[in-house]
Image (tube, rainbow, N blue to C red; front, side, top):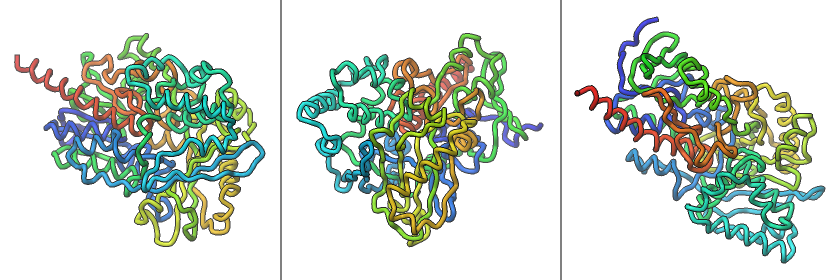
Length: 496
């Protein structure tokens, strides 16, 4: 093994997911010499842009980018490239099925934006006057809850929050189970109510869209900022080890070279960082035990269909039903091979937002459903089959014009594209670690590791913001100042 042509940097960032490239670009803008290393061909982590049969898109449907606020927009502003925050808004289709019934369809108007009328759902759920009154009471409490109260529900699951009310209608309970899936890719009996409230409030009252060019394009914009300020991005470069010398971060080892820096920021996932890249021997046993006990979000699995002609008119579709949501009991049933009557499905039509992402006159559908994060889960193929069947049933008009199906993606592909599996039944999580009670909100892991100069960035640590990539980018926004201050402190100590 040889030293790299350029040996020393101020900071090395391991992994170029949204959190990693946000942090790297901010540090580069501050004047630090940053090296970003990623095992993939392109930046973007789970949301990197992929080439899919002549189309550009993600491997999993990612919907609902806030247009007026959120971490992505904040990062574009902080990096001085707000003009590149190009998001298109399209109406969202909603499908719901009552047990044994037909699919009921509604539309959420995004352009121009209209605050959804809850009575549309209440009618669909067949609520009586008393049920409507209770539902409005709960929704109003959530929507108007002040920030200082929200944190109190870090210790209350969504299920426990709803159980404090008498006679919550089952379909209203199912609605919150659906929100728990959509916001946190988690389960209603494990996710804290505080997480759902934060997301509900942040998304309420503003249109949701999709970035022109896809989510990967936004990470590429951040990477370009880092390059413009003189830092380096090396793709197809897997980090095999993070160097620890005298109890401090000292650099990284790849297959072909050693790169040195007094600060290493890992966007490779907290568990892979501690248990594989650094190694348990460098940490206190209690910390290793804590890290091993952190739980993943659920995974996400689905498929891509190419249509010979455009059929679906909306940009995003959210599908649910009386029997679609999961809790721990229903999840266990699926593991035993018992599929629910319906699945929660998200359908993204990226070509409806940005026609330049595919051939003219055709349409790409990216769709999927929550699943286990376990790459070895034997139910994934059954979920693919069930999802395909449900898609054909919900949208019979697309069946005659399906040109191709695939690729199918799930926990195996998530792990290969983002975090290496280092513990049984984990690695393919859709978001990351810590969406369950006692592990998020005020309990979220610190971005500072016990090892001097080693930091974590991304969904797992450093942020208590809402939802998936928003939380990852917010972590980048918050971790960059921590790293910069540590850099200044090292400079000061060296001058004595």
